Amino acid sequence: MTARETLLDQDGVQLTVADAVATVTLTNPAKRNAQSPALWRALTEAGRLLPGTVRVVVLRGEGKSFSAGLDRQAFTPEGFDGEPSFLDLARGSDEALDAEIATYQEAFTWWRRNDVVSIAAVQGHAIGAGFQLALACDLRVCADDAQFAMKETSLGLVPDLGGTQPLVSLVGYARALEICATGRFVGADEAERTGLANLVVPLAELSAATDDLTAALLAAPRDAVVETKALLRGAAGRTYDEQRVAERAAQGRRLRDLAGLGE
Image: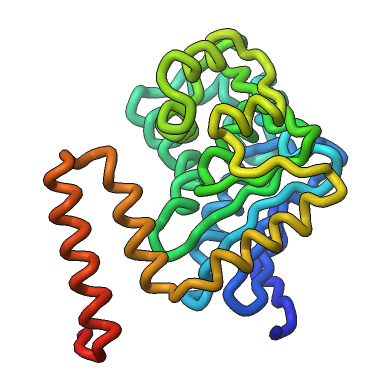
């Protein structure tokens, strides 16, 4: 294994790469990895900096909590240093507000791109934006103390960082509505039972379990995993017959590649 290289370390986000594995770490445990626009920009930059050799991206948070969600300072009149407060944004034009939220969402969108598989290793609290960041990943390995909650609705807001679609996809509309509308906590056992968590392990085993899953994902040929991920991600938007066509096309590419006939 090559030495781990640090490609980014700013605004509460660290990106390191070793061989085909990248690790994105939230590095502000004193604030339970609370999120801010600066952190979101750093997460977006981490996605841009991923080398093409990376196949698996692991997302983790330092300390007792994965991420306690948005830093409440965003709702104070002063906001963050050098940033418009959310209250100021609300007073601006619809176009400016929409553009700013779209910028925030970029931090949550690249995790599902087809050329990588992303894993969130979740311990402690994953609240609001923290919950949505875990949902942004393809897979979730959770410690047995994990607690998810979508608190936005309780604060008079909505989940707006890309979390609603994967939540509905994982647990269904009725349960997703109940989780969001009540803002209640979803523990690790329920998360595993309902499909939010792929695996739940004791806290002391979280790192090892994530490493084991990473190794299993790396065992298959990269192009086969990329094609399979693309097929599965597109399945919900296709009819059964359209999906069969997509499967045939993907398998044709794989067979030609294995026969040495690929482009």
